[in-house]
Image (cartoon, rainbow, N blue to C red; front, side):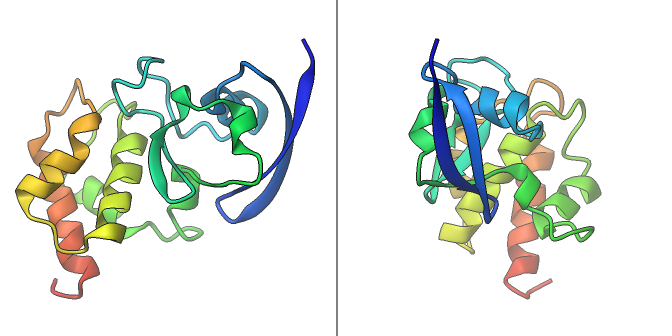
Amino acid sequence: MTQTHVSTTINGDKVEYLCETDETLLDVLRDTLSLTGSKEGCGSGDCGACSVMLDGRLVCACLVLGVEAQDRKIETIEGMASGDELHPLQQKFLEHAALQCGICTPGFLVAAKALLDENPDPTETEVRYWLAGNLCRCTGYDKIIRAVMDAATEMRGQA
C-alpha cells in the first residue's frame, strides 16, 4: 500500500508521520509515534479507552483515520500533565483510587478534562452523562465520578 504524509499538531507540537490510508489514528499514535497512553479496548468506539481531543472535540481514536489528522490539532493523555506536575484530574484519580488496571483511565481523564473545559461546575448527573461513553470493567464508576467532582471543585478554587 501507499503511505500518506501527514502534518498535524499533537499536544502542542508539530508532528509529521507516514501512514497507510486505512490506518487508524489510534494505531498511528501508539505504533508510529509511541504515544501509548491511549488504549485500544474495543476497536469499535464503544468503550472510550482511546479517547482523544481532535480540534477540541472528544473522539474515539479507533474510529478516526490517521490521514484525517492532516492540519488538525490533537490532544492526548500525554499532553495532560505539565512536566512532572499532574493535572488536577490526574491527582484526584490517584487520591480517590479511581483506577485499577489502567486501560480505561486515560480515556476517562481526557473525557473528564473535555467536560471541565466546557463546564467547570458540572452536576453529578452531568458528569455521569458526559462519561457515559467510557467503560470501566474494574473499579466501577463511583470513585471516578467522585474524583471528577473533587477536581472540578479544586479547579474552580473552592477546595
